[in-house]
Amino acid sequence: MTPTVPRCEELAAPSHWRTVDLLSDLHLQASEPGTVAAWRHYLQTTPADALFILGDLFEVWVGDDALDDPGSFESRACALLQAASRQRALFFLHGNRDFLIGPGFARRTGATLLQDPTVLVWQGQRLLLSHGDALCLQDVDYQRFRVQARSAQWQEHFLAQPLEQRRTQARGIRAESEARKQSGAVYADVDGPAAIAWLQAADASTLIHGHTHRPAEHTLAPHLRRVVLSDWDAAAHPPRADVLRLTPQGLERVAIVPT
Amino acid sequence: MSNPQVELHITGYGVITLELDAEKAPKSTENFLSYVNKGHYNNTIFHRVIPGFMVQGGGFEPGMNQKGTDAPIENEAKNGLKNANYTVAMARTSDPHSATAQFFINVADNGFLNHTAPTAQGWGYAVFGKVVAGTEVVDKIKAVKTGRKGFHDDVPKDDVVIEKAVAL
Image (cartoon, rainbow over all chains, first blue to last red; front, side, top):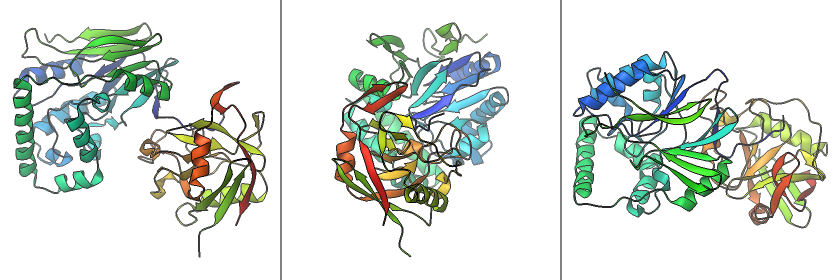
């Protein structure tokens, strides 16, 4: 084999994986028990050999030390993941809400943290997995915040504050963002040329991402497609909860219906 | 003791001077110097050039003839050196401990190549030095026209030849 350097992080799917599920944007939070229940039901019933969570599993994550309290919402949610990871491989990459998930989360849940983006090599195909926020280039303010919040310096400073203070701060940021949403702000979508550039750089043909809450499949170029995951909200009418499922037959969208 | 330096004389482009980190990457440094001193890199090419990512060489002669190598070495990616712009690191196969002669110069901050875990997935790529002179030569190399040659992508259309590698 010739030595080479992968252009972006690569994960070769073991040959025994028959079914791979991809999902994102569950925004799990204590005030949405219906979505948590749908998530629990899904984890207990999915036939998938591997699960890829492409960010925003949690509405907010203020630090892995939230897991030190066994009664915290984070601890209870991670117990579900830990049980699931005993039966299947579990992967996570960061969303814009839970970008502070770190090694403590990985240890507790058994999940492997992936870089954004990562190429999944599956049965000869190369699928580029991302949360998608880095591609929404028109959200200029957010992109500026993203660069800052991903720096070691910002994270050290934030994580140095007491847990309760971080929770309060996160609530404040969330209230601001809700107010913005209520005021009818238009959110940017994934930038097409940037998505094409990512796919070409990764030598991949399919980009799978979440973040935008606009589930769809777009053709970017004759051989390049962008498949967007749905968010989950069990309280919506009709409820939203679905995953993209990869099998040897292809990629399909599967609705999760709690019984 | 100061760190060893190596000059890569690139025909028609100029000279790239590498400083090797013998303290943090002793095995990679020794390995690289051994290939330099026996003339392995003389008349080899940069055969994989991807702007915004890296330029890789040290394994092929012009015409894409792959050269023989010595035994693979231990991957020193745990040493804390980052795959930052203008650093030099060892190329390898998917086996973390498979580097031989081929190396690459990062032409961007490639954080995803850094060591994150002692697993096949997380080993990363061992940085063992950096460009201390001739970054403009690296910039010229990364801008060359490339195409597909045989099984290889991103091969410069016109050979970028390391005429000689000299330990200072």
